[in-house]
Image (cartoon, rainbow, N blue to C red; front, side, top):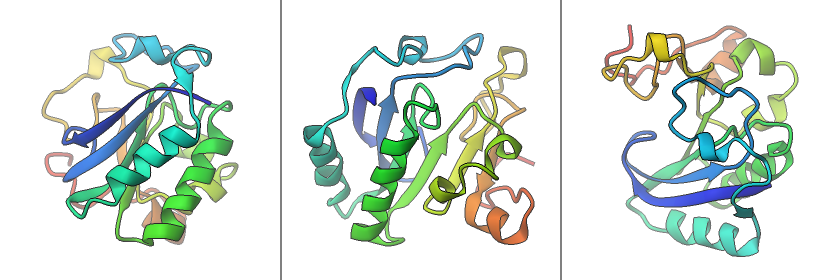
Length: 171
């Protein structure tokens, strides 16, 4: 897996101050994408032990509320093994004290049955491709109104999509 950036103290991709990992690789090619430079799986730099150490160094700060995986698409086939492994490592070290969010162009329905091992460690999933025609700057945590901000653990338990309750402004 390659990545483009590890953003420290991010306030735009989830609640509180977060670490955001921007991975390489996306097959959705959304019109109006904020990060088209991340589409190519070979772009960016290799995700290695140094990158993992940087992420954990940031997560060790008490003021960091969690990590957000963005991109690119963290659930692109080329990224799934490494993303799943990193989620597992974060859960082992921090338990539920650090929240884990993922932005993906896939819908919940496309991934729930095949990517459950990844989803088991995730708190919130923002699903669906960005749609420029449905863009709404007031839509909290998502870029377009077709995207959903999903409470993953409740959705897995209830076997239906449950929207994230603290998602202010999304009715």
